[in-house]
Length: 240
Length: 312
Image: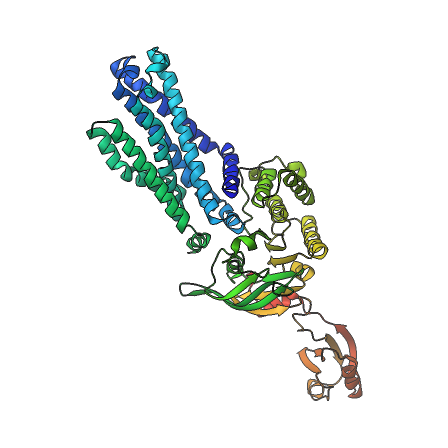
């Protein structure tokens, strides 16, 4: 675990020096925080954004988008910028075990995605409170369904995108291609969930199951990744 | 460990599909020595280094680094290595000090020791005053020095350096050269040095190996590689002709080779003297105008071996 923390420390230090990442992060959080509140208020009046339970879930979907956008950018970037800067070669010559290199990148992407989701939620709460003026108790967290979406699905989804994005970046050499493939891979795999979201009645058990399935799939994929990731495979790929 | 050997290659080969990158390497590197690994681009140096650090699995043969197999005991081996690859691979978004702190954390040094080692390493390469600057603003030479400092941070038993003086100005080349020699001498640390600078290799290395197309062409003391340990002199003669010189009775093991005009190259047995040859020439009434001890430079030998192409 100490080695995982070491790589995570480095990644955290690098984020503060990565202007592009900071812009994507700020824009995603801000957009996903403000847009759903303004949209609801514009179409159905200021109170709709705080009173409707469907509106609350609509806002919850935007919290998930914030996580997907941020992790979809971060996870490939963590691998690809190391490849472009030739630091991946350095990392592979150190005593760091394979699981620390792969695991730290997945964990830090997940943490950043989850942080983005929570910040987007915070901005939504603030904007809703300002527009609706109805106090904090009306907000999405008052609903058990909302809590599962916000805390459960956003965590599962962040982890899921982090694993897929890291996998993709290990196999796709070009930065833009890796972003696209990551988002597309996640999008395709999200279709059953989105279809369910639209067509099924959003009961608490259904959403809870969705959260658990995302979490379980993400953890399974992560464990498979840890199992099969070996530094010599990566070097072979780079040489060929 | 394998006796006094820091690295042992035993029939080491590596293929990529049908292409052979490294073929049947068989040699060893002694503890506490500076070993030069020379060869043109694409000779297989990087592939060899990658196998040494356990990044690549050999197709055939084996390699022992500090007595262990770098593939099966990679973490043990890599924790005792300091590696600087040709691309250096520094984190541009981090400062010079942060790059070294990361290396120190990887080496699992405690907080106080990290601080001391980072300060000492930066001072050693004259970068202490730039410790808070981002590496993205560093020149090639500064990157090389910082990469070297990072390789040294964990005080490794074996340093593997790929072109450590590339991009440095003459003063810094001297600084790095002296640093490497002192590291090898003071602490008995072994240094495996890949370089294209043949004059540097001749000055710094105890032994060198020349590689081409994955095959080992020669290995030995860089100062004796050309003459293969045999004393050589260049003779300038007057009088007599080529035929007369060619038919002279020479001491056992001695040879004369025509270089053109009145110039001849004389070689004698390893522990013999050149005087009997001179005496034989004088006895045959051939004048000897000059006798100049000759040392074939590593560069001459390298160019002879790799076909004279300037692809180093």
